Image (cartoon, rainbow over all chains, first blue to last red; front, side):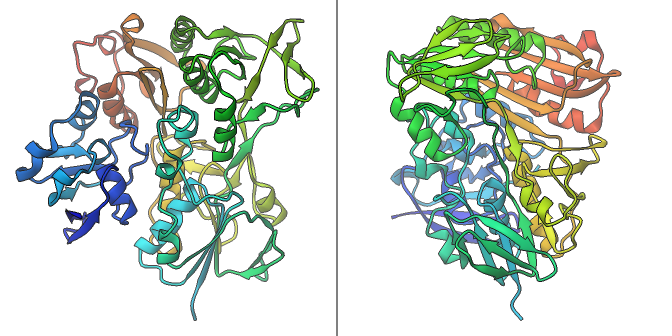
Length: 104
Length: 403
């Protein structure tokens, strides 16, 4: 079992048992967090924006090119910004800590 | 007394609405009625990743099947609403049940426009709207098969891209003089025409399909100019029709869609509507319109669900769309019209460019092809009604957001 620690848009903290092999976005969606994810994981819209906690950014890996272009144009982009649809949740990410970014 | 909300339609809008209702703390009864066997799912991948076999069906579900009972949502699949009575506040289902509501959401979506032509009911002639369609098409889409696609819009071209990659012989028959003519400028149509042709797709424009021939199964597609095309399967993508009949029979205002206000409320104070089926106002665009898009379905469903919980938040978004074909990410924001000035930014030969649409100098829409930054910047600029200089905006050395 691998956990994800989440801070939602209201600043409330909670944790979920993540499902391995699907994206972090799908994990958030399946667990009812408010997150638009309008394009359904196609890296076309930037509505599944999260901030990965500093300690986890290296482990999660860098943004891909398309993702980077989408993120860079957002007003609320931060160093830990990622699109959660582009991160596959694996055993290695047990304990992943993230904050859901505001809706832009 | 416990309130009951009935949601008619279990597509993207219906699915989003029930989720938002629970998120907003509505703890009454929710009944969601859908005519398909599936829980609400994403339709866009049906003509892309699901058709290509790259994405399992379950991953298109907006919420897992178990979520609905967990959230006490009474989901009725394979069920249609046949009528409703506004005075009694009840709906009647195809199972013959009468269900009472306090508030009703119509998220009835659209259905495909059927081609009325001789032979149109032969086997292996498909439309693409739901999961069952994609599963059926996928079974027939074998390497070497002759695939004829009627309609060169998003759906037709997305299917063409998947089919040619699978090794099928693909012909697209478009009725108008260029592909995707309803949504993009001639320059962009020409670009996509060439990309598909280079990939091995045969595109014929100005083709009026007059019928289909075959013994049980389709074998040939016939056109008005007496040409014919061998076909093992045919996929027809010639647009959709909004499902407004139920609303019209209930005497709600209907005009190319169920007429709603900026809060998605219909002409009946207890009834809302959301998604592809609505004719809604958009203050940013300064007019009423009906849209066929996921963004609109999601955002309107949230607006409607909020309003049903007493939270009024006006719906007003710049519409946006996307289409994936080959390695090309097409992102569209705003609505262009014939007569708009078109500025091409970048070089189509690089497979990376944008078409900017200006109306009286004002930036109104964009088609961004592998130009993600342009698309993201454009969404904001279009909402602001920014004026652009035609020479400067064509210069890719200057970021669009700095215009």
